[in-house]
Image 1 (cartoon, rainbow, N blue to C red):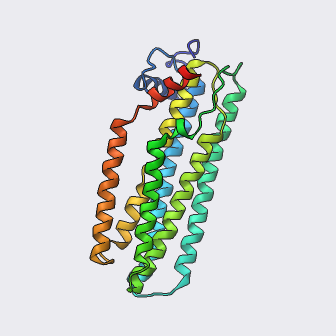
Image 2: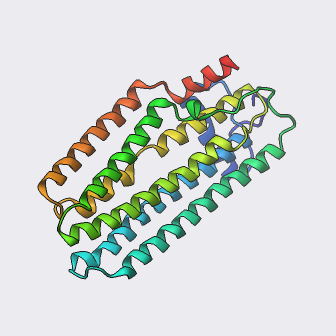
Image 3: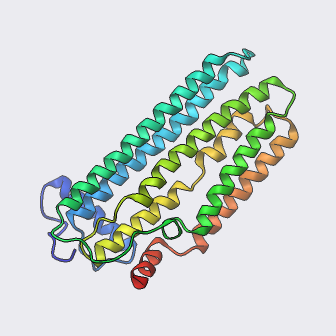
Length: 270
């Protein structure tokens, strides 16, 4: 990675991507590494995919709210909104799959241009990419959200029960979206030609995996659709779940090793 063109050469778009890659390297303690078109293109694609994923998650919350609107209007036991929500979730899953496939194609094209592959026997597993603390946090967050929604099914009020079904469909859709992206991070081969690009590859995987564990939908969907409509005990449990989850998330950000540290450990072990 040290013999590539400087960030100020090439077309304006490419030069901008190289400057962003240079800043990314500096943030991760790799300021002495010169950015390559390979790294710049991979980072640029991931930035677009990250933004698109936020849009998909926002769309999931919106369609869930739209599916719940007839319930708030007193129109219970209508299957059409739930069917529309299920179809929308399937469409969003397809969109996420296409985004993941786009990232895979970019990485494959980048790998095909390499004059050689890094001679380093690693394919980071989930313990490296995600880590036990983040994996436990993701599982606990999902389980907590499902328990909250499922507990609302036991409420005698039919409005609350119908809203709980909407929340469950949305939560399962969000979990499937996360699973699609994690599968890509764990299974797609490393794209690198030297130690520096190999380190960057691991850093990207760790960063992407940690961002995926941020439970945006798990925190927001139950609160948006059920808070206030459910009994007081449910509202209290939801607030406690949210506060506890946010505390753990903040602690993980500060207490766990950085993605760059994880990558250096992988390189030293290998």
